[in-house]
Length: 366
View 1 (cartoon, helix red, strand yellow):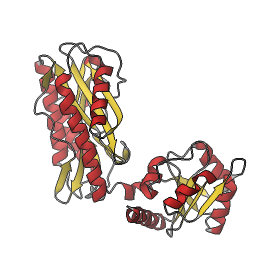
View 2 (view 1 turned 45 degrees about the vertical axis):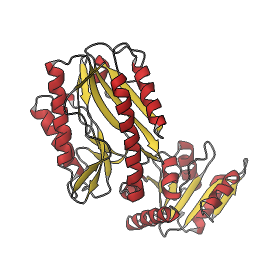
View 3 (view 1 turned 90 degrees about the horizontal axis):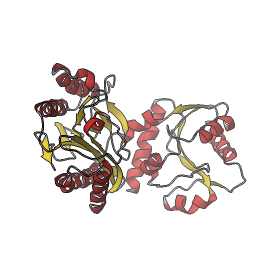
View 4 (view 1 turned 90 degrees about the vertical axis):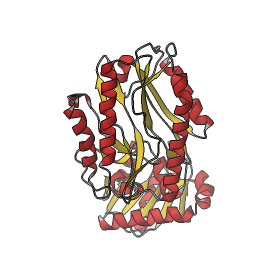
């Protein structure tokens, strides 16, 4: 994959040049992994990989990272020992590259002490957030990335097939959450999150699972995902303990129609916001518009949440290789909620799902 990393850096450098940005400073784990295949950060120590708009690259890092830098093919390594000033090395690099008065993009998740330190060491440099620039490259997945996302999706699908029949009244949310994590782990996935929300808690999109017992009649939302080969899955399924009510079935049907409408809108050239609008229109027409309280989806890849988002105001056009979630929901406070989520990628003639299709009706379990 070394050629893939080089290609990514070349494409990012071209974006920087086109925007008049002098360079990009990587400091976050996903940035390191995406651009160089590096899977650790400096922790509290300053560690940054600098990419110049002409494609040149250098690392300013603790000397204890020198072997790793060499293994990754980073030949311009500027190491510092504890007690020395890494920012002096960064300032020297900026001077050598003649970017000491230019514009540097930095990772959005760069630690504050690094950002403030860079600004002090390079007072004539303008620092800007770099995620949007990096997303122009990172959001378009290549074949290897798509295959990894498919494997991560398959691990989540398999976990759901195993756990769904075991969900029953008397279990706690945390017990079901642990079952999903164990099932993903058994399929080669590194569990990242597992939210189980039952009854009134299902009306909280980001509920914190706890010791609450699942009861007869509860609608249960399960939102979970894992990492496989550095890429992630994110899936949400909704079931009911015991017999369903007419209202529960109706709400599920509306959310499913919204999910399908959003996916039907996916094709190259369509703005992201149109996909959001397609889902929202179905729910609003059914009279539940005020209860759909989040975006229709988010980008996905090495991170569970990446740009671009499927949301009103995102006017950039869909392109083959874009990957994101489709997850409309309806949340009735104090009562129940329904969300249905698959991850998809844009293809030349539409889209492909990384997950099996959701159930056509609200399934009864337990």
